[in-house]
Image (cartoon, rainbow, N blue to C red):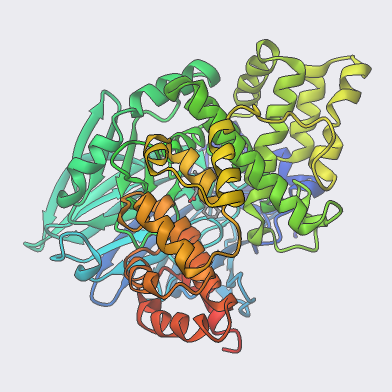
Length: 630
Ligand code: BES
Ligand code: ZN
């Protein structure tokens, strides 16, 4: 770095050079300088120069399956900085210019597997640069759906999935969660498609060139760049409450809105616990079933799989979860992927607290018991000493490939444990104050524990010892002070599972009266090995293959395929041909593959047909099972 070109000093309010003073909250966060915050998945060097604002002017081309246009970046730079390093993956750059129009020199580095290519721009004293570019048709973040992949069948659809490091395939910026950026966008799409983004829609929709429409958006709060998201398709909107609503394809809208009637109650419950909802609106979009996740917490516009629609609101914990990210994750985010638990574990805990407020103690206790069982099972499987059972994932592991039962369930269990030991009267206000103290800032495990010690524990060595904080975060397994779920939560269903295992007794009437969580518990407690006769009887008595509940359907199909139950294959094939949610797709293919000779060719045959309809994330996961050599 060379020193002190006068314009490069422009970091203070006193400085008058364009683009003007940089507000204090957009300055380089001191956290980013700590070793614990280092993100190995970005090329950016924010200590030299960092993006503070992204302005997008993009055109959606469904035929070419590309987005093309200009990203204009505002930059804060250290004194003497001469270059900025951005992340990109497969982007084709045509030109980079400064705000006065002169071209800037740049280089695109070698591709690094998984990470993409660094763009190093010689910025000189420019603090705003415009990048003209086009994305690749195979951009990881974007899934372009043919009309046949939508409910309406008439129009194409596109959506993005930024987390974890996909957004660099359609936006040239610094793609690291600690480098928060505000953004604005102007997006052009062919009529009659509507465009939504994870920002507030601004102004009227303009028509250009007769049949193209222009949509504008703004996110005025600095967010992690993986939270910039877009979707476009033949979608309509329905209000759910004063500040919430849902977008979906017209054919889905009634069912979506009916399933989501508890949304305002969830926002109220979350605010009561964790303070004001700071993002203005809370809207959701129910995407076509190809969406690879259950949900994604894109600010002001949660993205949802349609598979959460069960007709009885029993799977809306998903919405509580994505909403909860408005505090844990979107408001206070991890600086590095190694602290995934700080995002997902804390959110899973919040999800459970919101569920308790909205759906009551019984449902919350059951969901907690399921989550506890998942964590305990993962630890038993991986081994109590296994490094990947630590909440902060060790250096040697790929942090994007974490075990969700550890990150989510052990993470939530940690907070339940602290809550139980200190009591809700103390824990709740502390957690709320943590979000306030670090709002719109990156965080690390070390910061979380330090804050807890300073503001929750105080000078109380006995309490400190009881909590075993470091064991929970950096240690392996499940510490001995764990707060166990209510043993009564599944008393009935566990007794029924024991009866079935002992003498095959099965009560279809009782099954019908159970909650979804109870039914899931029962199916997960079934013996690993089941004969064709037993599977046929389970299906007949419990009416499993007729279920409209995706979680139940999945557990049924998994048990059936694992046991080479041929009558379930057509149903599995239908499911795998429509649903792209990886949580379901990958384990079903795995169940087939694990049977060896029987299921391998079935899996291969189905995958040959369905592969191209999956999102790159799901495809990557299933490729590992079925195309390991390629
Ligand atoms: N942020 C996650 C989804 C995600 C995680 C995307 C990691 C990319 C990388 C989202 O909030 C989530 O956790 N979704 C869950 C639902 C939840 C109820 C456990 C899912 O998709 O299943
Ligand atoms: Zn989450």
